[in-house]
Image (cartoon, rainbow, N blue to C red; front, side):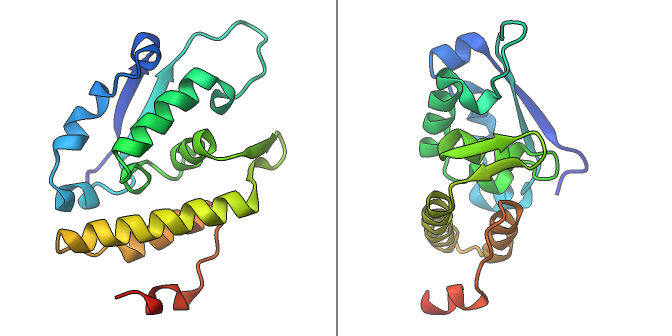
Length: 159
């Protein structure tokens, strides 16, 4: 794993054009290297916000659309996004219905989070197996960071 996170700035013009070129380096990495970089990517959005606008980044439609496209074409993003500073949570907030409280932070709609995380667990477990890799432990960490309690028997039903 890298010693410090890799930071990428996504500029407003790239967001407006749905340009994913800032992720190209990560897209080109072999799956084994991607898994070695778990939790190392920070995405920063250079998005103009009017002074006094109270919206969180996940409330801007343009940012959500860019993130939806990035997530669709790079479904491994949750594995590589930095976790301790909220990068992963913000990414998922761009994808799922949620509420925000200054006291409690992001609160995901439970059913939406359950569906999304289960889908992502299936998808990334199969993706890693296809490449002769295993990432179940990292997937469990992603789920835990999002407040999703993964039943230990979850993986037993899967090959």
